[in-house]
Amino acid sequence: MPIADLPSGVSLAHETFGDPADAPVLLVMGFGAQMIAWHEDFCRALADRGRYVIRYDNRDSGLSTWFDEHPVDLGRFVAAVSTGDLAAAAAMVPYGLADMADDGLGLLTALGVERAHVVGASMGGMIAQTMALKHPERVLTLTSMMSSTGESDYGQPSAEAQAVLLGPKPADRAGYVAAAERETVWASRRYGDAAALRELAAASYDRAHHPAGVGRQLGAMILAGSRADALRGLRVPTLVIHGLDDTLIDPSGGRRTAELVPSATLLLVPDMGHDRPRELWPAILDAVAAHTA
Image (cartoon, rainbow, N blue to C red):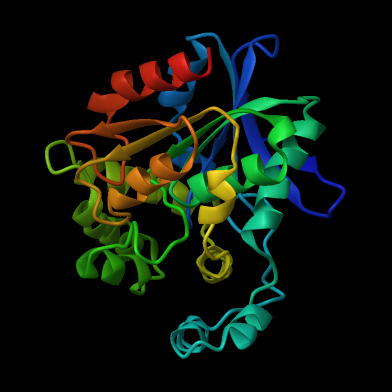
């Protein structure tokens, strides 16, 4: 697995698909997930459409740098945020979304890519938005998928989805894999696949099980705050994709993103939850290929 050592001291595990001479597409994964959540077949299908596809592990996930010297007590963090003590909350978290955005751009630099199409899912969409806002000269197009703006009035999870997201997961492999079925709460109602969730959980556990990282990523996501004002001034061509079955980030998050970004295109996908069912890949791939043409 290639590892890129960035000047910041962060090392990022990554993988590429396709011809480096083709238009580069950087895939940014979401909260607590490894790059393998961008399925290899999905990456190859996008590469087959004439794109140089790059997927990578965010910091604190997979085989990229872990920040375990900065443990985060989720209970204390959530309590601090809930009481409005953001200074105390911020002191617990060693990095922010802006640092995670710099990671992705740093990877592009390490690969010799000056400008790229950036596609982010969920928290990855927030990171991708931040890349486009901080360094629009590096982002050819933005695709924000199943994500939101950081505003508290939009994109909120259902109570059941939030409970699954923040609930404890078994430490043993068998329990961890079985618990992945809980994520059907935010999956496509038509195409949700418990077996596929278990398969990804098993592969992720075997590759790099790292539950401590999710607290720091969650902190970075929550403390990023609203991007609404900045998004109003974004001039990067933007596609927003959101599933109508999404209960983890309500579709209002996608609608709001498209409303704020000038001239953004909004694609609301029936039968898609907070997932990318294989049955819907053709629609998603066609949309991304057209947007990045």
